[in-house]
Structures are given as structure tokens and as C-alpha cells.
Amino acid sequence: MAKRDYYEVLNLARNASEAEIKQAYRRLAMKHHPDRNPGDQVSEEHFKEAKEAYEVLSDPRKRTAYDQFGHAGVDGSAGGGFGGGFGGPGGGPADLNDLFGGVFRDIFGGGRGGGGSQAYRGSDLRYILDLTLEEAVFGATSKIRVPTLVICATCGGSGAKPGTKPITCPTCRGVGQVRMQQGFFSIQQTCPRCQGRGTIIPEPCETCGGVGRVEEQKTLSVKVPAGVDNGDRIRLSGEGEAGESGGPPGDLYVQIRVKPHPIFTREDNDLYCEVPIGFATAALGGDLEVPTLDGRVSLKIPAETQTGKVFRVRGKGVKPVRGGATGDLLCRVSVETPVNLTREQKELLQKFAETMEAGGKQHAPQEGSWLDGVKKFFEDMKF
Image 1 (cartoon, rainbow, N blue to C red):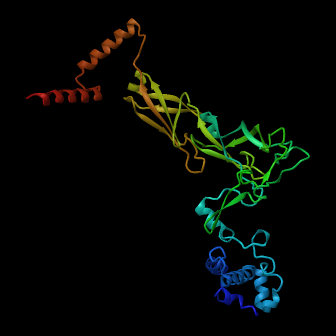
Image 2 (image 1 turned 90 degrees about the horizontal axis):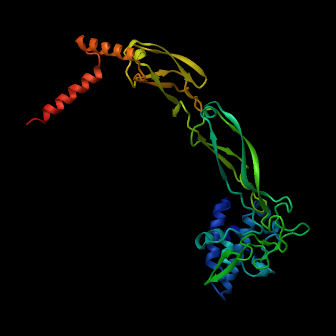
Image 3 (image 1 turned 135 degrees about the horizontal axis):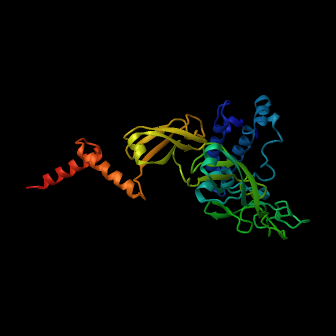
């Protein structure tokens, strides 16, 4: 009997896209699959016909030949099912899970195996790097030692004893999955013997115990860019744990932790410091040297400066790691009360206090404001 046109079989236009071809085939395959139509010879023939059409039209090379020469251009290359089964192992019909494997694995929770010895990416690692404030602000290069899993040198990562090699798992025959029948659905699950790898190791490597990886201390050089702050991370690609079965290694994330500084604290790109000044300097004013991370600067203290006054020194903060304007240094002054006074100094201060009281002027504005507030508070309490 003459074969029908493949586009007609799938009910498609000749300019149909790959997605349209796949969708049409899945629709017909689901409708006519032998598992859903046991003993129905007509449905089985429709299924074979749809599968043959799909095998040709889904292959760009075969489709081109078919479009140019018709069935003559693909005779012998399609329809692998005619004369020797059609798609299933051993010549049997392909089951629904073969046709729609991805869909049914999502629904029924298929294992991570499914294609022989599977390679898996290694795990990412995290390392906390302690830095001084100066190292964080100006950048540094640090040596770190990281415990990690590396490829076993004895077996080269295979897990097998030298001179031997892994063999195909006899339970799943290398597929990494086994099938369970539930009604007309054939559901795949991870092979319990090889855990989805598709291979087993009869003679494990004595060094790694068949794992293919061993723990090792790895020394790395980490270049810390200027301007990093607490919580910033530096990614070292490929420096994580080695992958399984030849898979790629993971990454190493170096997390920055800045140690407390005896003088400065940091907020974003600004630095803060407390600057104690003497009573006389606060009252009369003067020049004061204050530290910065790259030297000293002179700070002009105006007369009558009060505790808590903040002076800003431009450009003496931190340059952001991702670019932008450099922050500032903010100096908060704290007026110190004199201690360990001599008798003469005490007498001088007493005379000074007497002159303050006799002057009739307000020499302590904050004290006066506070006293006024206290007075009003008690007056408001009167009934």
C-alpha cells in the first residue's frame, strides 16, 4: 500500500515549524499508543505511521530530502519500527514515558539519573576573610587555605581501583533509572543500585573509597579590591569542590569581614572618629591635628566649640569599590573635663567661675536652656 504524505499524516502545512511538528506527533501518539489501545490493530498502524512521519520531519536533513524527492529521498532511513519493532528496547513499542519523558518525570518525580554515567557540578564553597580597615579601604592580596574536595589523583576521579574501571549497572543497564508500571503509564524512578549514575564500581579505589574525590587543603591567593566592606563577596570561579563523574567544579565565594578599628568606624563610604579636645581649646579655639588612614590633617577648632560638634574633612573617607565619589572623614569632638588638678589650678578655676557668675552674661547656653526647661516643667505641675 502506498504511503501517505507525511505532512498529511500529521495534519500539518509544509512550512510547519519544529514545535508544530512535535505537538502534532505528541497528540497522535497519545491518541493511538498501543498501551492505551490494547489489541487495536488500526490504532497501532496509525501510531506507526505517525512515528515514521515524525522521525523524518523532525530531522532537518531528512526533511530536506523528503521535501525534494518525496518518499524516495528517505526510503531506508525512516520507519525504524517497520520490520523490527518501533522504538522500544528489544523491538517492542516505545512506552509513553519514552515519548513524553520530560513531562512524566516532572509529574511523577523522576530521579536525577537517566542517561548513563551522569556528571554533576561540584558544590560551591564559602570562606570568611578577616581584613583590617586599611586592607579593606586600600585593597590587599591575601593567602587563604581552604578545605575542599579535589579529584582523586590515584583513580583520576573514576572511583575505581587502578587497572579496573566502572561497569554498567546490571539493574538499570546503564540508564540510571528503572521503570514501574502504573496502569497504562510507565513511570521512571532513580535506580536504587547505582543511584542514577548508570555504573557501579566492583573494585573501589583504596585512596578515595570509590568516591572519586578526596579532601585536601588548597592554598589560594585572593586579590581584594580597594573599597570592599563587610558582607561583600569575591567569587573565585572553579575553586569550589570538584564535580562528580567528571563534572565541572563549583565556585568559591570569599566573604569579607572587617575587623573593628581602634580609631575609626565606617558607615557606607564615610569614616567617623571621636576627637577629644581640652577645655581651653574648646573655649578659645585653636588648631588640632587629627589622623586619617593616609596621614594627618589639621583641623581648625573655632572658639566656643561644644561637645558633639562634627567637623567634616572632605575626601578622607573610602572610595567605593564600584566607583563613585570618595567619602569623607567626620570628626566628632568631645570636650574633656580637666582631672588631677593642682591646688593652684583649682584656685584659678574657682576665680574663673566667680567672674562668670558676676559677669551677668549667659556663658553656658545649653545649661541655661536646660534650667529654663526644668523651671517650666515644675510650673506646669502646679495646680
